[in-house]
Amino acid sequence: MYTIAFTGGGTGGHIYPGLAVIERLARRGDCRVVWIGSRSGMDESIVKNAGIEFIGIPSGKLRRYFSLRNAVDVFKVLAGFFASLRVLSRLKPDLLFSKGGFVSVPPCAAARFLRIPVLTHESDFSPGLATRLNSRWADRVLTAYPETIAALPAAARGRAVAVGNPVRAAFRAADAERGRSFLGIGGERVLLVLGGSQGAKQVNDLIAARLDALCERYVVVHQTGPGQDAAGAPSERYKPFEYIRGELPDVLAAAELVVGRSGAGTVWETASAGKPMILVPLCGTGTRGDQVENADYFVRAGAAEALLGAEATPEAFLEIVLKIADDGGLREKMARASAAIGDKDAAAAAAELVIRTLGAEE
Image (tube, rainbow, N blue to C red; front, side, top):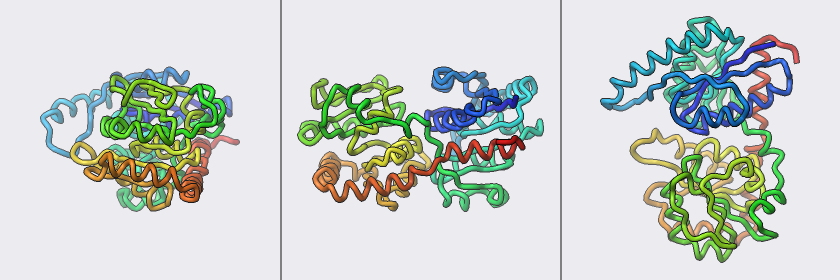
């Protein structure tokens, strides 16, 4: 029986791909999996809801810019390192798999200190600070995009391999009719709006500004995010949800067009369903630009249209929606480009690298 520790968190985008790899490993029946994540935030609830053992550690955010909070968080990072040493010394895992996020750095450093093999995966187009640090200690660096390898520290590039972004099996086994049944609709066209696990006010405001016009073409299914206002009152043509949980894969399968941010989870899950996208990436101060880069990749591939910053006006947004809605050939072309990206089974590829690193037989 192998023991494999996973680490990562802060957002669903740092957790769900790891759960997809765990699903693959679980098929073997000879792996015990433990997740090391932040004591605060969403990490614990997501992981435990997936039936995975969770151990919380202190975590401090890594910032590239000056902030007085860095002085406090450096002590949290140190506390996380020593907590990780204790946890890993007790668990004695055969391997640590990191999905990134600031919480993953102390466990990766501790694993290196204890000579435990480390694999780390980067979901975004360019490597974040956590991946840059973790790549120093990792035996293999996995990326979602081939182009990401060139942006890694030079010493890590020879240990890097592009596998895509792991997507949970439920998205590949989704059923549009189940999605329609959940929504209580028949054969109507569906526009699905996703703002990520926390929602997105900018996206929500665009929907609110043009909801009537959107509902003329589509049933608008809107994941608003927890605690955020819906664009209007629920109706047969507008169906808001704070968060769509286990039904999301089936709802996505029922959608004709998807609108959302361009976090790694959103774009790759949508691509696995082969759906055209309109992306409104998070940009400006407070972000390193990863969503803009993700969106640009899918736009260049022909799978998406994007509105950046001040471009994302209600008028421009509605114009793009109507252009795609009224052109079946364009929708089909975008869907094919989306599916071509999403067809890659990154969860299987990542699990294979885990097994290969362990030296275990398939």
